[in-house]
Length: 298
Image 1 (cartoon, rainbow, N blue to C red):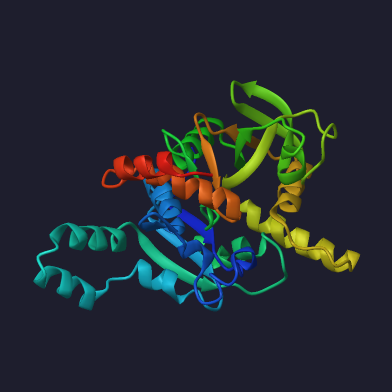
Image 2 (tube, rainbow, N blue to C red):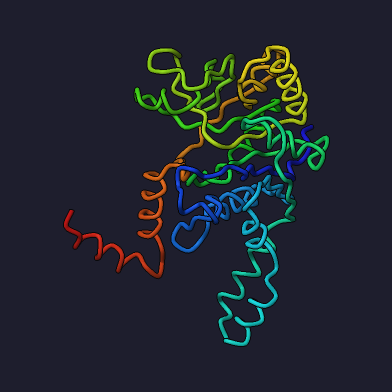
């Protein structure tokens, strides 16, 4: 029987260079989607699936992430004295979403490094990995769907996927190849990072989000060892670690996130689209915002 998934790792140590100068003194993960930072959507996704412990892997200039999920006593006091009880309730809710832990990233370049950095806090438990500048609109949530697939099939890894088959998609995303074992669940035989059009017979694009057994840490360690032996300037990436799990005959799955819209807020254009779409959903703003957009002459 699988252990309950209680922990999530959120890598948030990147420099956000695509958003400079906005990210010179502000983490990209804290850029607002209307009135809520990107990373809060990510945390709420994790919490929706029963995650209790959130491990955020940070770097320099990321202190505002810690402050956001902290108890701001002075702000709470001021809101209470001003009678702004709705805002006060929301501020307290954010701090109570989960138990938060912070780790400073260190080690080789690559997206497997922050996962490796959190190994001592995770311990011998399955865990979720979500990226701090990406989230998915879906109901059930992305994390709920991933955890359900993990509990049903008992694999070593479940990677979030959205079906994409345009030529440009194969240049932007990693893809999983393999055999469908049920609708929307692919048993992975191989993974290729940005294969290019016509190079893989699959439309399972791998997006941010995964559930791993703790053996993933050993696979990352083996990947690090191989990089040292090769002595090549390649980054330490989680795809290599998943391929090591596959070499060891471990079951790895790609789970299509049903009804999911992927929000890659690390891209300027996708970030702007997300802000507009969420502005059109916002209870206090949607009608006025829609009227404003209709009047725009572009």
